Image (cartoon, rainbow, N blue to C red):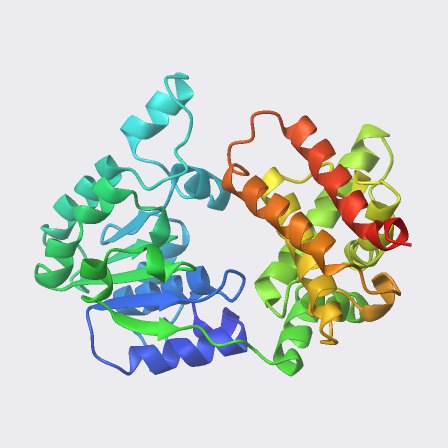
Length: 358
């Protein structure tokens, strides 16, 4: 992964970290800032045959092996669900168990995978450039998995290097945090984020709205645009129509309409989303409405898209509590359809609470 292909704010941070010594890095910060991309860029530079101060060359056999997910000196530790989403191969045993319907892909980093990775760390480097281990999201290690790591982190065999990336560093064991150099990802300016979104195919006017919807996190903004595009493609495919190219405008328009639609009881814009994403979007709306109570500017929505009159704080506090409770089971909802109905009903009630107090 040559640094030239990285977003500029990630490339700068990669060059900065590569200039500092250390065998283990812990990258922390909110999702959508590029933790995974920065972690992979560090690993690529460590394993590159001809690295530069800016990072990996992107041309050598080592870079090619990593690009096709087949580098002999690299191990990736992610939940199996993440591995499948990102196109990384699972261990043969794990893949066989899933293929034979013996179990579902794990949403945690399994202890078996960690033990295999520790055994990998003891081997001699195949290409002579050292070995690297990437753990993402590191907070997805359960207690057993996490406890297997500190000794190897403290006494790394030979030329082994580690990079852990997380959006919840406080959930990691102190024995892991204390053995790593820590780097907090920096928020990019809109002057860098907007051109990057445009280069990814997002229309300029939509990019600004999506970046606000994502709270200033470019990768999350791009995910919003692509999510809307995939939904539009699914609808046109169902109608056997020719899919129209979407450059983020549908996502931006849907985001702007969301508060008024929810106030009218229309949650169709959320229907195809995972429950965790629905809760996250509603929490953003609730946070902006609470900010309006104090006279603060909204962070995720344009002020014109929010109710003209401030909503009663007790109603918003009640809604926030309902969302917090829903978030606890969002990854494993008992019934996604009923959960959406409940979330839509509570949103409508809160958004119309000003009328109820008149």
